[in-house]
Image (cartoon, rainbow, N blue to C red; front, side, top):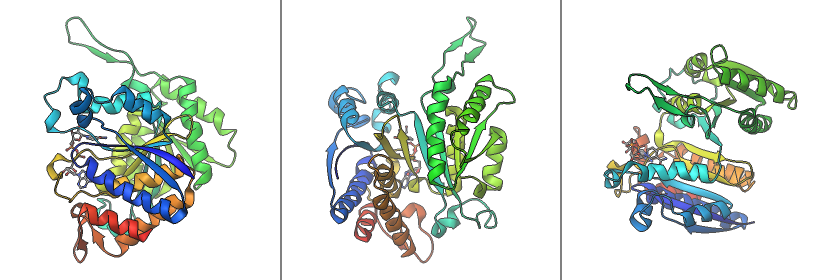
Amino acid sequence: MEARIVTLPGDYIGPEIVKEAVKVLEAVAEKYDHSFHFDERPMGGASIDVYGEPLAAETLDACNTADAVLMGSVGGPKWDHVEPSKRPEKGLLALRKGMEVFANLRPCTIHPQLAGACPLRPDIISKPIDIMILRELTGDIYFGKRWRSEDRTKATDEMAYSREEVERLARIGFEMAKKRRGKLCSVDKANVLECSRLWRETVDQLSHEYPEVEVSYMYVDNAAMQLILRPSQFDVIITGNLFGDILSDESAAIAGSLGMMPSASLGKGTRGLYEPIHGSAPDIAGKDIANPLGTILSGALLLRHSLGLEAEAAAIEAAVEKVLNEGYRTADIMSEGCTKVGCTQMGTLVAESI
Ligand code: NAD
């Protein structure tokens, strides 16, 4: 297959980790006889330096005509003085909006080799944990109206959802559950919020189209607790923007390492935006010590969800497992008896395992 992938390395460790993910994708292309064309563009602070803005119109155009977009991370002290509306992170919001990616996927798995980094008790994680959190990304209280009273002593943020917004997200969740273990848990606060009642009604109606998927509903406060007490009960979780923001960070903490976690943001078609969940880590940039595995695993999600290359995606995931099994670790996940490697060497090891 031929595919055009826009890469947006971004700032600080961004270029270091994206370089390694590209190395791994190139190894996949060679082994499986595909042709991936990489189109690198500046983003965030790097784009401010070139265009004076964090996301140039031509960069967004390139993203919207590509098959998929792979991003590193943006921001850092160099651009802290920039006026708020032009900060690197604004480019990220503009990119998500401009690409109309409304579903954010955050897989949460515990690599058995890294179980020591998980803050939960061993008996809690003795059963396999493989959760896919699907967070709505372009609606909810983050995009509603907000205002202050004239005397500045009261503030209001509006939470709003439409049936269409809920349905398009839920549909992705049901499709995903069908391909996984057939379980979907919808998380809301329907005992209090009208938006949540609309959410639940919509999911319930849609569930009739997916009789093979077992649906459950959970209030968000209970879900936050259950993720800690019995994480193995979950397969796919769907939830709104605000609750998803919090639960997906909680799930990242369960997985133990920021550097290992991939993410995908999807819209209506197959085009998607793929990035690790961490930031640009200015404190370790330029030292060749960043963990590139979150970005490499984001590359696996890209192959699976945008290019439909399941075997190739699984090959990347298996290669990462193999390298971890062989005891190679970057500094952030290092433990006794393992071999410490840098960012470049970790990328090379995974590429060679492909
Ligand atoms: P961060 O995620 O960059 O770093 C937090 C800590 O985790 C640091 O100690 C860092 O060294 C470590 N870390 C992060 N990624 C790592 C990796 N791959 N390997 C090893 N260690 C890693 O969060 P921060 O320090 O709060 O933010 C730094 C900058 O990144 C800020 O400008 C912030 O706005 C930006 N940011 C960007 C994104 C994004 O691009 N999506 C997300 C979060 C933060």
